[in-house]
Image (cartoon, rainbow, N blue to C red):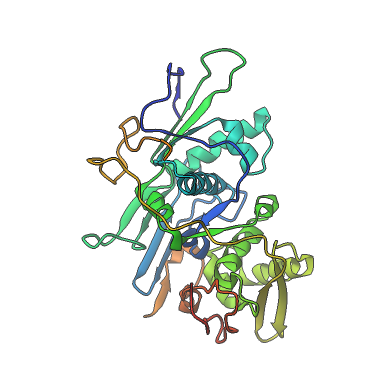
Length: 350
């Protein structure tokens, strides 16, 4: 983190965070794949999996540990800002600026000194965590490598009593997903009140796969354990799932268990009182002519805001073979069929 004197004006090309309360949005790739630590204690063991022709490796900083699922709230805030601006006819940019208070308030955190310190730590972990994946790779490349934030910096307020600012630069891999409405889903604002890492991970997975299907979706416990990339053993994981079913804490979905703990248990989830809809309207990519789409270093002008087969898991994850069924396209139609065989969709995806 670099702490710099505040400039006299907002740098050109930066997208100023929008005021107001609007629906949170999430990126489906982040909902379906294990990209973040689910633990509140630092995780240094990489996530390393290969699934068909898709591979993902997430490596943690030796100093800070891996970015957590709570840190990813900042990415949900950024996605929500970009989609809201786009739908309002504003130009967007991967270069973003906001006050810490704006970010913390949106993601349901406090605004005290301790919360500001946690925000700085989360930004640092997002920048220092590295990802290599074949998901949405370019035709001329095998893997895409990036950090969750290309850069970030905190700028002090020019006058005492005025709010400082945080500038962040989103990676191209993440930003381009925000320009494709098919990759975005709304999530319930109550998500930010979920306190457990497994609880948050499960909500995002359920939201992606079950969507608005009346008959819901299902996965075996073994499948979910493999899919989560958690370092917890299966017995502990299964006990935690049973507790989540007992508590019924996932907003918009009911959870039930079928099967016998001595043989095989299946988690079934169905929508109930959903508050979510689509991700946004169809996307029009708004950039100035002559501006490259890739994200350059901070401070370089990007866009101006203006109105108008077999599945394998690396040993380091502590997980065994993953189940490919979980990565069939989810269905967010309102009348999908009941999935069978541990999680295969039986209705069309939309």
